[in-house]
Length: 313
Image 1 (cartoon, rainbow, N blue to C red):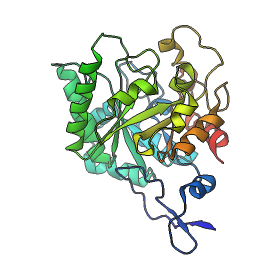
Image 2: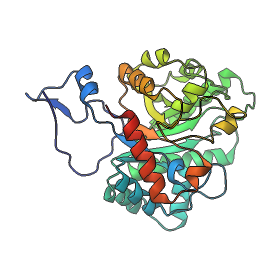
Image 3: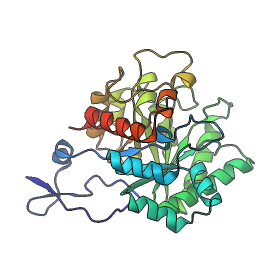
């Protein structure tokens, strides 16, 4: 029989540990298969899901950070992904690193990550270097261990060798800070599927951000996910969408639906991650004008409730 240890205070970890709180009745470790069949899912909220704005604009969020953390806690979330731009805004408003971590602790956000770097592969880009420094500082400030980054979403034509070398450099700089880097592949990028993303995975602290939208709109199969090394799955993002894309994929990705309200095989997606032995919490990322327009508390409540209904065993 399995039982859970009682939880202490809010605590973050530099890695997602698959057996972080599961023990057998005699105090020994439970087999992974038993853990997975008995586990209660842990859900984190993506910054975009409750920012109240669409990505790419000048505004980070129309809601104060503490209000977002409080809404997440009230909804049931146990973690939050802080955007590096959000961190920059907090610093500009006089919020110290210590106070920022205290906010996460106060609202029970035990699982923490930082997102989302884009131009890390562009040599001589001062803005990209500043973003990287802020992302790493943000992770240190809140006690996160993973920073999410994107592939080349704009199709700027860098060679595969260039991208892999620059990614290795990014991972080396992250390792100096005790951080891991999760690469998010996307169908319209230079890393369109998980097979292409695996070419980047040589660094020990490199891993994958696996977004359900990119899986089902792209060429990644659930069989490929099942065969992934579990230590390389650093982020699992969940969402839903219509059966067929509307317009270009780069635009359709901004029309996501709450989990269970679209056509994605989310049961199969969860089963594939479980079969791989993935330990990462499920991160709910709903990018949608309709969700951005919702009141904060409604966006948090509905995103969590639908994810829990779709993914809890």
